[in-house]
Amino acid sequence: METKKIWANLGVEDLERTTKFYSDLGFKRNGHGVSEELTSFTFGDDNFIIHFFIKDRFKWAVDAEMTDLKLGNEIIFSLSAESKDEVDQWLKNVKKAGGRIFAEPQDYGKGYFFGFSDPDGHKFNVLYWPK
Image 1 (cartoon, rainbow, N blue to C red):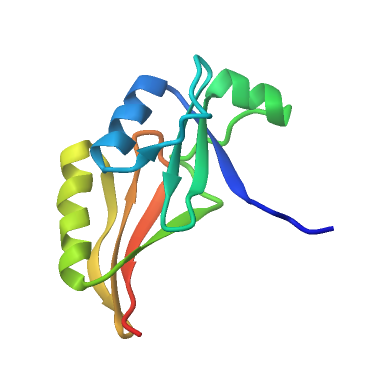
Image 2 (cartoon, one colour):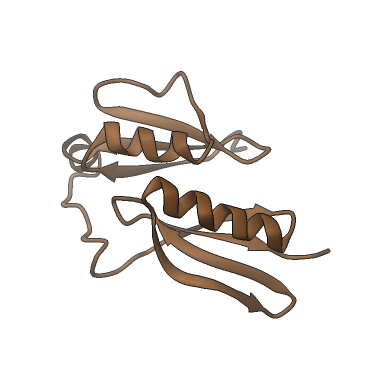
């Protein structure tokens, strides 16, 4: 067997708020993943897709309750940046869009990053790691 594509599915409270947040950050909407139950965006050069399902639909799909992201996390998505300045610009854009900063910008080895969560608590970091 050979896998052709991988994407992520996450649950959210408010599709309109989620759509606005990721649109404000400049992510491209995935036109095939838009309905009353879902909004979808592509990330990065490889067009990694994240579908954001309304929580009731997501709970149905996984046949389980949603995890309370205020209490813990299982995953963090990493977004690459080309420079420290770009990381700092991301920080400004995330704050303006209404994201929550959980890790202020900091040097990490030879890299530089900060961490944020979207309005539903899904976590991301933006990382510059020189070659």
